[in-house]
Amino acid sequence: MKLSAHAEAMLAGELGPARRWAVEHQLQVGRMFDAEDMVEVSQAHMMADPESIGLAGLELVEGFAALPLDQRRVAIPMITDPRGVDLDYYDPLGQTEAMADIERRFIKACRAIGIVMTNTCINYQTVMPPVRGEHVAYGDTGVVIYSNSFCGARSNFEGGPSALAAGLTGQTPRYGLHLDKNRRATRRFSVEAQPEELTDWGVLGAVIGRRSGSYWEVPVIEGIERVPTSDEAKHMGAAMASYGSTPLFHIVNITPECDRLADVDGADLPAETVSKEDVAALRGSFGASGEKVDVVVFAAPQLSIVEMQRVAELCRGRRRHPDTALLVCTAASVYVDARAAGFIDDIEAFGGRVLQGTCFYQQYAREIGEANGWTRLLSNSTKIVNILGGYGYKPALASMEACVDAAVAGEVV
Image (cartoon, rainbow, N blue to C red):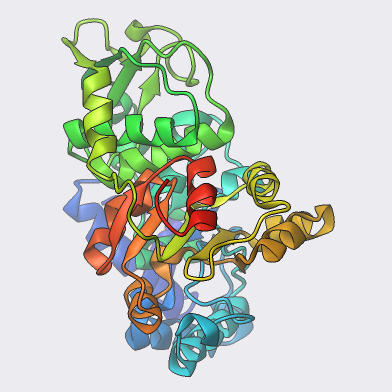
């Protein structure tokens, strides 16, 4: 791989061991994907919840944090994905002091190297959305697919070490979606049923993701009759990435790189129909009418201020069933605004709990379920119901309104 003079200096250790480690890591990744050189990136976003990093990852970052200041600071703006522990509320969830200790130590180490602890998977709604053509190094799959598809930015799925390396060097291997040729459509889907509310968009994304089934497939979608809101786009992308490892898709006349099918080489691809039956079948696989609900979860992705307002409106003047918990996960920056607007008060008066800077499936979901005896989980997130079946839950899917109704009734309505 071709390296700049600056990168060669980092590799030689002239800028300290952290940057040498970072370039060595990037060379290994780049060679794996046949990258010819590096591309400069303007910002980095790292997934590094304690359940994933463990002690090994923690000690790596703590080692960097102990270096002299000029050797340890990240080179570009760098932020974080949701944490695994809300340090203001973890013991009642069944999380342990050992879990919280890893979290505290990791936060301290990240801050020492200049990482801003935004703790969010909706940075494109809250912090610094990228613009069309901007090369970035993002980790969270939902962040990557939204930024690639709806912002027109360019990022691969960067694992935690790769995102950290990009933060330290300001570059990443030029492969995958940093290249024009890999952003062209490879599958063409024609949608029959128009999605309406958030969960509909998530289910549609899941159907297309499942049928695409590969990181290297790029779906182009036609037949969508209206521009989705930011939250609808968020749910669609998060589900597509969850079901298909998809990092980029196009919607004709909606997403920035695809005014027409021909813009992404989609006109000559055979059209595959996404029927009403396809959508209904996926949604039906997560049905549970009449069954007792242990916990209702709004997360994956974290909620925007608009979603927080809607949950608060649905909870206002009502009370959850004593045997059904309700958890809401949002970014700390959204939490501040939601508290000022009274939304948090409405949710807490209902009997729910709003967690800051975390996402349910990244915060020891299995251990939380076992500690509280939770099995049947209900959510409006198509992504989370896809994931949590592997964590010991029986997940069910419903609209936001139906989820709150179930929390009141104690069963799926």
